[in-house]
Image 1 (cartoon, rainbow, N blue to C red):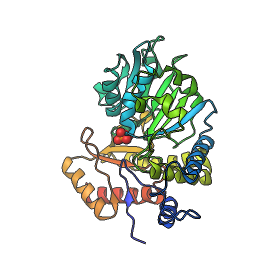
Image 2 (image 1 turned 180 degrees about the vertical axis):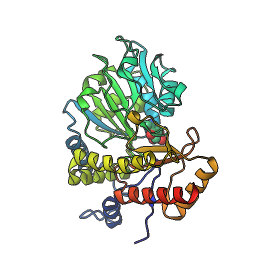
Image 3 (image 1 turned 60 degrees about the vertical axis):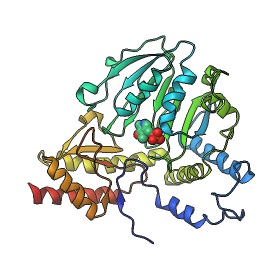
Image 4 (image 1 turned 45 degrees about the vertical axis):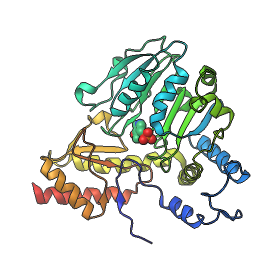
Length: 362
Ligand SMILES: *Cc1c(COP(=O)(O)O)cnc(C)c1O
């Protein structure tokens, strides 16, 4: 097999090797079908079984209650920045947004086209290095919903609590930490996530929506932007991203075989701890961007003493098969994305490299 590097890319990102192997083995022809997953009809019983099995496995993984629908949509998580307000804001036409990074800001931008946006909290003045505390949230009890981003992929911060929002439906962009730990779906009205970080390949977005909220989708909406239509058609109103859904199904099975979300959370804790310990024990050579109690277990952001050293770090790490570590330009420095499928051996290899690099350059 071709040599694989340690892939720290923020998304699209690393996939589990057993999943890639199964895709490869069955790519020419699905067992008993004689056609590739890339060739079958989305109306075939083969695909319908794949779709329904994927839904059932996701339901099992996160204990998703039966009064929630699971949808597979196109357009990326970014289309949800528009679909959420278009479907859920009327008739009140106002919503609360908690702004903790670039993706939250993009969500706000689209929501403002639909109605009134109340910024319930923002940590932008502190360059998004922390998550606001519950006491800081200025929530409107009459808002149509509250929107937040559970993990800030670019800044490397993550919510370690679910905001308390009373009876107002809670909407969450979970694109970069969904299924990385057990979470209580019943606390949410709607959850969405682009697949390409923790769930599968690019091309499909998962929406988990509480059924009563489907009643908010008005008939006047464009059909393809209407949650209710997608729910009534089990995501088969038009041709869904067949291949991407198939791979999400394999990833869900992989997670279940591993022992589910408790098991993956333990592994994720271990990986993140290895790298954060390396930062904290470096006598200030490495400096984390996020405040300690806001640290992300998926995207670990850190700086070096100079931009020159940061460039050197990226270059030399890449040469050693540690790939995708360059941080986003809005934070600078380094970012190690260690999603579910990222192997613990890769975290250990990074820690070794960090120690070695510090010894040679300080
Ligand atoms: C990557 C990302 C997005 C954007 O996803 P697309 O599928 O590219 O539209 C949105 N929100 C978060 C938190 C992300 O990490």
